[in-house]
Length: 465
Image (tube, rainbow, N blue to C red; front, side):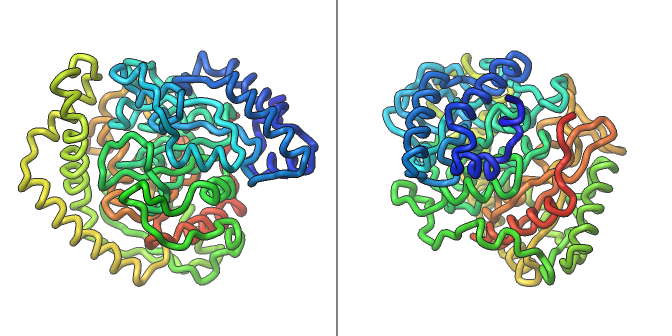
């Protein structure tokens, strides 16, 4: 049944619609892979075997009656374990919330269910989503399916490993400093961070009120568009949700990129980077040029300020959210997470206000660049996924902690809130995936999706051997 778990969502939806396969058959194939690979990968915190089987039977009946709800009808999907699921444990990757059972569903959970998707489980994650490796002392470390000795990246590590390994067909992650794009790059899949306010965060446990976004993680670009069609849209229950027209992300996805203007910032992204990664990203840039895009290198000095802005805002807001936990449950927190939260407590109100002012100026500079270019192109990660045992990484004359290096290149686009996608663009010499990052103007997810699709259609994405 392995062939069923290697299908894309699009391919499976066509087979389900034509009744060549059934939702029950598709689900059972994925449950079989989960049982086979989970002891190695640790992608899940909770496997919803009985609930998903019941959902598959319902979906089968509906499809047989030609009551097809969407392209996700009958498709097994995973949720990062910070999406609220009514009556189902939601731990946020923490021992503090190990018995937390929400009384309502998140907006995304509702929308996926309304689309007929089958929620197959709650995925492993870095505690409180505050980390870039998914090394979790409470629920175990998620392992990279390309090589289980390597990290998945974080914080949506279980979502990435489950998609890459065929345990689910798609998964939902969250992204505050790169937590969708980092593990997507590390595990060789597609990860989309939508525009801030495009997808409702209602019922998603927060990390940073002004930076958090939620989005899909899939094996193909078209699958990402399919999931966006189901989850995007205004929600009055989320104060950050923005009431703008939602696109059908599939309509223009194969339009090609002839005449598209792509800007490649030459500073910041390449100051600390593995030469293999730099080579792959530049090869991808040339390929996009060959496909008709107008690719131009340029300098964007403001990027050098992105890490300071992001760190102050993220850590201050996270410390406020977890203030009660730090006072009453600090002994139950992971050492790395507690240390970061305490850094947020040290920052002053003036530090926070200064960062907000700097953010405004930063975003204005990025918006100016996007008046000239339709897309900005950059590497997602400076390295391939490191080994689980590696705490420090040396590149040239620079040594950085693994955790800070992993999020270094993703955080600028959380400051801006702009839509950004990570797609695979090659492999390192050690056969670990390399990620390419594409960013566009606010609410222009369609632009980065068609750019990613043009590249994928021409080059294809590496597959796990």
